[in-house]
Image (cartoon, rainbow, N blue to C red):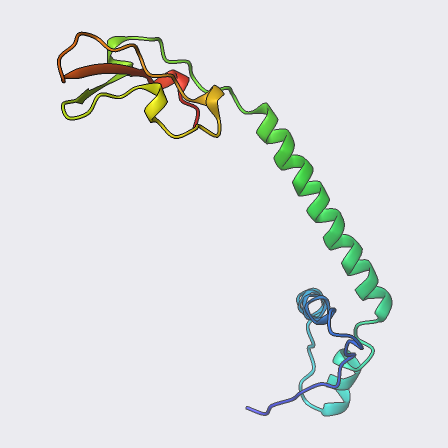
Length: 142
């Protein structure tokens, strides 16, 4: 099989190579060369003016428009998504934490960067070293 490397329009900067590649692939898919018998026929179908600079400018605009359109669609889909289901407060939605070694108090904890999202510690129960506390999972925002 013979190899043919056509002389094609090339970019004159270091940023448009992807645009040229996309435009060549698009053009090749729309109108592939049909006559492979002579170099003259190939040059006519895939010659240096197969892609013009105007095509590259319009390609850049089409890509920008596609990105903006898809971004708007994604934002609309995000805002239209159903809200998270609300889990009723039951005993099963609580985590029980048993601390046998240390007594915790709010003064012994490091400062919380987001105090509104974290539940506070419950008051101590009893005077022995075993402490039980419950944390409501619905109060914790991830």
